Amino acid sequence: MRQRWVIGNWKMHGRRQQNAQLIHEIISVPLWPGLCVAVAPPAIYLQQVHELLIGSGVVLAAQMVSEYEQGAHTGQCAAGMLADMGVQLVLAGHSECRHAGQTDAQVALQVKRVLEQGMSVVLCVGETLEQHERGETLDVVRKQLEVIAGLGAEVANRLLLAYEPVWAIGTGRVASPGHAQWVHQALRSTLAKSLGEPWAMTPILYGGSVKADNAAELLSQLDVDGVLVGGASLKASEFLSLCRLAAQAR
Image (cartoon, rainbow, N blue to C red; front, side):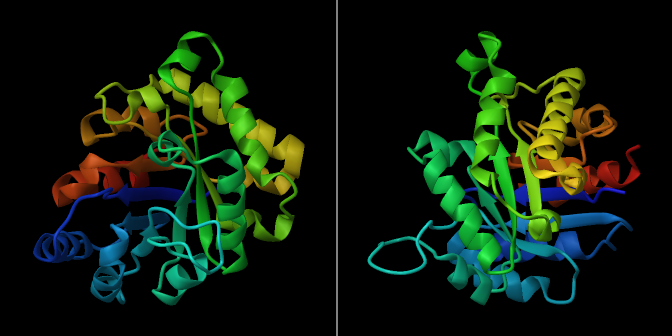
């Protein structure tokens, strides 16, 4: 059975006191069997959140990573630094990073660096509104998948995908459950055909204006293995509701 995930991406939100309260409320509820839960705070708060999560079973994630191992790269965090901070999971290729100019070549290197350090990676893929309206969704996401070409089966259990239609992120628009299932199924099929059958077990998450009141039907889809959550991860009750829905789905 594929792993089920709920990942909270805090983006550029949080202060020390708010972080402590949010984490306290999240970890006060026992984890659901079979569900993996992760939070991705801003890099400056990774140490704080790492200490707050000790013994909880909740995974510490990072929002991004440098493609470089070290050197004169002001403001960047190398994969080795993140691993040293207790990070276990890293996002790569998030649409907001791509919008800021991040290329597929950079994403490919980020994935490589994360895996080299023994961490897991969430590769984010998704199409813009213009690409969506032109019917190019599958062409776009399959092209974005090419950054993991050549990966061996030994790292298959450390890769997650997140389908995040760009037109749904922070807009209040949500892909229909049928559309999400169509894309997720295509991604799973592409992984299996291009990299081998073990990759068919890759967890594929949906991200894009996910909230407790719209997640249940998305999570009931056969190839939707969880959610990558933005704004809804900043309120403990909402985030925990999403965790419960993900654990109970299917």
